[in-house]
Every structure is written in C-alpha cells, then in structure tokens.
Image (tube, rainbow, N blue to C red; front, side, top):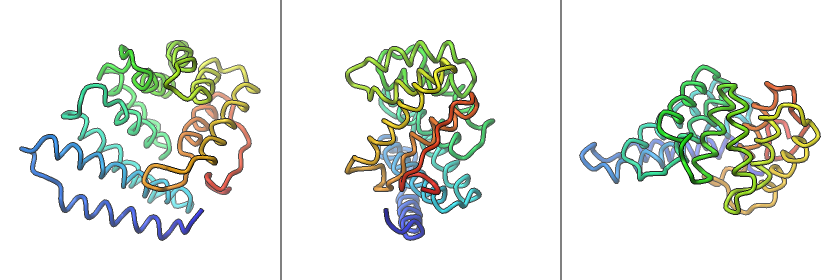
Length: 221
C-alpha cells in the first residue's frame, strides 16, 4: 500500500505549499477552494499518522483538517455538505468526542437535518449518531440506504448502528464498505485508507457492534 512515512511527508508538503499560497480574504471563491485543498491535505496526513500508529500527530492533522474545512464552509456553494461531513469524521477518527459533538451540532445548525439531498442527510445522520440521537439518525439512514445516488452498504451500516441491535447486519454492511475501498482505484489525496470504515467502527463500538476487520487499508492491517 506504500510508504506511510513518505506519504505523510508528501501531504505535509502539500499543506505547507497550499498555506503559503492562500489567497487574501477578499477573494472569497479562491480562498474557500484553497482552504478545502488544505483540509484535504491535512486529512491525508492525519490518515497516514493513524496508519503509523502516531495518535498525537493524527490528532493534530485531523484537527487541522476539520478547522480548514469549517473555515471554507462559510463561502462555499449551497449544499457543500462534504465539509461538515469531513469535520465530523476527522474528529471521530482523532478520538476527540467533545470536538466531534461540537462539529455535529454545527452540521445540524447549518441545516443538514433539513437537507433533501442524500449527502446532506448523510451529514445529518453522522451528526446525530455522534450525539447519540439514534432514532433520529435512523430516519436519515433509512432514506439514504435506498437512494440510487448513495452507496447502499454505507447506508445499511449507518442504519444498523442507529438500530443498535443487528450485529450480523452491521458486520455484513461494514465488510461490504471495506470491500468497496479495497476494490476502488482512487482515494482522497491518493491515500489508500478506508476512513469511512474507521468512522463506522468508532460509532459501532460505542454501541457494542464493532466488527473484527483486517485489511491493508486499516491500521494494523
């Protein structure tokens, strides 16, 4: 899967280069685009740190990613739910529950709960699961799991987490999500880590549903 230390150095260099070329605040469009790229690079670095088992570095980089994505959201086009999703996922992966809950509230206050798009409802579902509001999360999960423009295994995994009782269903769903990562040709920032699986596992673990998984795309795999 590659040299994680070298990939971390690459992502850190991308971040430093992007930060040096960050446009002034007056250029809202270009600035929010660059902030998004910075968030992506920081997230990639954070994933590499997780694969290396460096929790401190992972927390630093993932927190930086969340902050950059959140900063970019104010001037992003309507429906840019990938930024709140990324922020929530970053804090969950960093193991920072308080920060994850704060990001979850931000996503909901930004209107994710009222969004009609599957990506918006995904943002709402993640946020509600982080906050422990499982019955509300299940409404969104049940909607996106049957939507033709959303990956069904992710929706299935979210629904079983929200239900909190279907361990077999969760294992089958998360294994399908992992397989989708293992068989794809492209990953965010060219960092081959099954980050969605890690987030699902963190949410499932809080409900006693986490599966036993092993993969080159997961820490310790």
